[in-house]
Length: 245
Image (cartoon, rainbow, N blue to C red; front, side, top):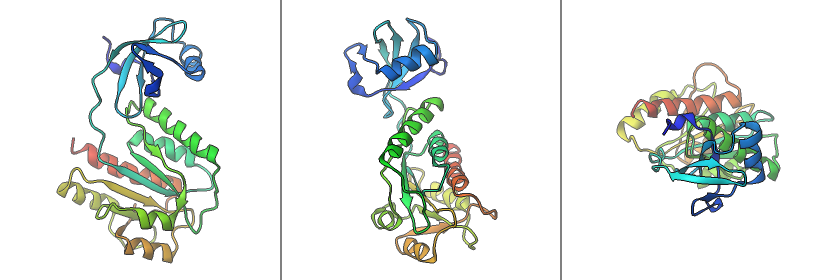
């Protein structure tokens, strides 16, 4: 069998598989046949976004499961990104942090948030996360939660001791050094990153976050766009964890 990296990937619902048959949706069939130009009999990997994968062969009607592949390695410990919604660019944030290995994305509505997303946005973001996971050969697709207020998030977030609030123009410890110290002590620690809106957090929001065990950290001396800050923060954690593998 060819290396798994040689095969294109699509994400399916496990209910689409019955015995050795995979029933493709019209959209999936179009993507395989028309976009990827996969011929009849061509093989691809179907994955459920939760660690299970199957090698499948395209047929005129649907697809035939050739074999169930070995379960993927266990998912990394939780890496949650809670990000205040910017006016534009959140699609790119979802795509890039999904490639980097977040396990959950929580859109936030802060005091300075201007975007009020529709229900269709949530569906779009989940699809983007799914496509990004396929492209980056990650078998775990992050979950996109419904947008909630910053206050609600801070009060319900329970990742005590590993929850970080990224702030600008403050004399606080760098995120990188804090993550390195955390992973040295607890390599399997769950991590939560909270990123502010365009215009930054209000003083009240910072105080509330600190009162609920969120540690203020810096992403460096530059003042980053909200979209850049989200990707930069996740990159720091992703690379720090990769070094432990």
